[in-house]
Amino acid sequence: MTESNHDQAEANCDVIVIGAGMVGATAALGCANQGLQVILIEAFQPDTTFNREFINNRVSALTRASENLLVELGVWSDMKGMRIEPYTDMHVWDASGNGSIHFDAAEIAEPSLGHIVENHVTQLALWKRLESHDNVSLICPDRVVGVSRESNGSKVQLESGLMVNGSLVVVADGKKSAVRDMLGIETSGWLYDQHALVATITTEKGHQHTAWQRFMEKGPLAFLPLGHNADKSCSIVWSTSPEQAEQLMALEEQAFCEALTEASEAVLGKVTNVKDRGVFPLELKHAKTYIREGFVLVGDAAHAIHPLAGQGVNLGFLDVIALLEVISNATGQQRDIGGMHTLRKFERERKASNVTMLAAMDGFKRLFSNDIMALSKMRNAGLSIVDNLGPLKQFFVRYAMGLD
Image (tube, rainbow, N blue to C red; front, top):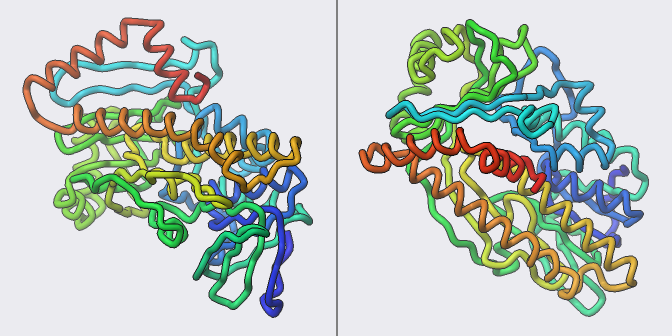
């Protein structure tokens, strides 16, 4: 990967990727592996250091489909060299009753249900692999100030004055995408009445390579296992009301550990330590279209989802898988990779799937984050019924893993 010369007035390539986060970097690497000339534009200088003693508080539960993509792109081995943690089981239970469900990788003949990976680890591995490609140029830091489509391709005007020309622009600049707005693509959705509190914790007992999730009236609490400190470290995602999130952030460490121990019903014993607390608002957002001629939205620029099932970045990786396939087919048939014929195939495949997942997660959020007695009885019964219906439970697991 080379740094682009900011002194030049114009730069040309096949694919322009805007946003070098996990999804954008994956798209750039996939296109580079197909032999395309790629220019990657990023507004912020990335942190390219890895500290084994520090655990980032933003993690993702990567599915088997995401793992397969990262293996194919050659980055998974580098991620394993830093830190990833497989989980073989997942236990979910309801605070308002005795309903519960337990998922076991052995039930579907898989070695794991997925891996808990710090976002920074995934980003670093992608960055390292991109650096080995001569056909990838990085423009960073710089911002997009204008976009257009002309007869000879797509144009991206940068704050530095540089004009970047390409056949296709992959828009991966996040859920607050400025480029999506420049393209005039509207979104639908809403803010949830929840904030997510994230942190890294240490517990009295080991996590048993299990992801734990308790549904409570104000939102779910998830303990995600980390490969650190003799398997007694977890990353937490505690979705709760904005008011309670603010109160929890204000607590001293010992008081917070006690509150977290109580909220988790001490499923892993006492919480003994907490580091790096952070909080962010939760929302559902979905672009009304993913495409304009010469432009395509992927990842959070196209869809933002509630984190209760950990599907966020996995949906973005599935976007990349579908996009790489249509690009490969178009180049093989000597068609314009930025043409509507190519991009409509991508949108047809991904939009229906993403709408299904967004609706399902929104439904789960509304079903489980309330204290309505009738719904409480229904969800407790539902958890127990599904737990005892092997084929249905296996279908849910395989779908969540991206295998079906």
